[in-house]
Image (cartoon, rainbow, N blue to C red; front, side, top):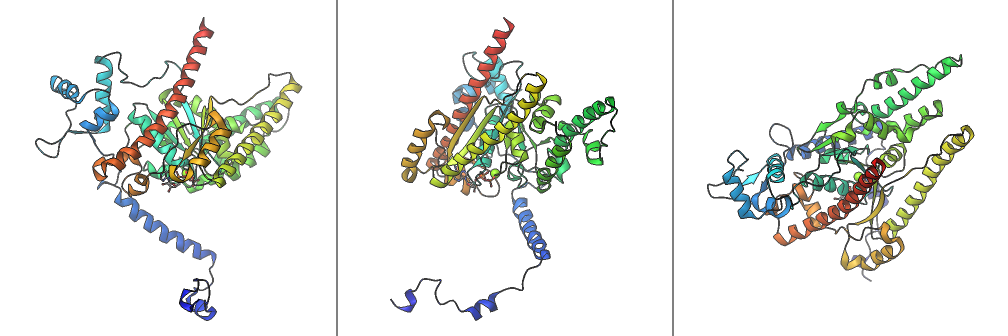
Length: 460
Ligand SMILES: Nc1ncnc2c1ncn2[C@@H]1O[C@H](COP(=O)(O)OP(=O)(O)OP(=O)(O)O)[C@@H](O)[C@H]1O
Ligand SMILES: [Mg+2]
């Protein structure tokens, strides 16, 4: 073998390597790198923003509306618009060109068709009256499996379908927050104060009990006192989607992972896993929205436990690879250990006091194959299907170049303008996420209907 054919890791000269090296790094070096990243990030982010600094959602064409959003024929759609000049008429780039509508206008048109059109058509998506929003947590402690992409696309699909959506970012990496253009200054604009409020309320009740017993109360520190005044609504930001709101995250949210165990040590009876559910319910958010999507970090920390405990539906994205399947198995094992140990701890006390025992319950838990490549992964996916059965969604979310290609301006398929792509590529990419939504919506409608029937039976 000639020298030129040696692999690249031979013949590296240590002296040349020294010369190429920077000085040893100090802690301050991290700060410098972080500043460089931030400047670059701001530059990138600004390219996706409009002149006034806010992100804007693209418009939707008549073709797209009648094909994907409102189930009517194009000719009928045009006729109805003509007959009703008060309805949004859309705008076009040229005199005779196609009409394009904002999502706000699409939602108004949908409402109009819903109230005046044929009752046999599905203009408004199903939600049983009087029942609370469904919460959906997307979780897996394995990183990069498609949690954020799945949650973001489902939120957008549901919004296009006419649901009112809240997205909660529990990941201090804040990917979901940047998908929806959120701005979060510090942990006080994340769910952190809601968890603090839940604990502060517990501590106040506990202090009352202490004083009744003649014991000294535990003083509430500034954080807890301030948190008592924070309402969930004040953390909700609107996004460039008219029917998607956001409670964002930011790096400081990670602080919760250190603070929560301290509170838990201090207040042994605090049910931290109920914090998110209780606060959202108390503040009425479960009535204000149809669906609440919770994106979680790649870890089973306190924030994820809160998100999972609050969820009605848990979706677990997983790639069809050995490592991801293996890791996901261990994730379910950890879920079992974690929630079983909470139940055991609670029920030990409950039994001693003669109170009813508690058990966590989820409406549905489903694993979803993401980033699927049928030419390489069919065998592994079939094997996963065989072992997981109904727990694995039969729909596999294909790997699509559309996600990578969509560029800085847009985040995912539903924000991309189909004219920027080859029609075939667009149709296939969109179809796979439409199917992901359809599989999810089947679960959702099933769980809502089950609740509705239970409520009816209870009323009889
Ligand atoms: N269907 C898909 N086709 C192609 N690329 C995808 C698809 N889904 C996700 N990706 C890409 O895979 C990468 C990881 O996805 P994502 O950020 O959604 O994972 P995650 O589980 O949220 O990661 P983390 O654990 O860091 O939060 C991203 O670069 C994303 O663009
Ligand atoms: Mg993520």
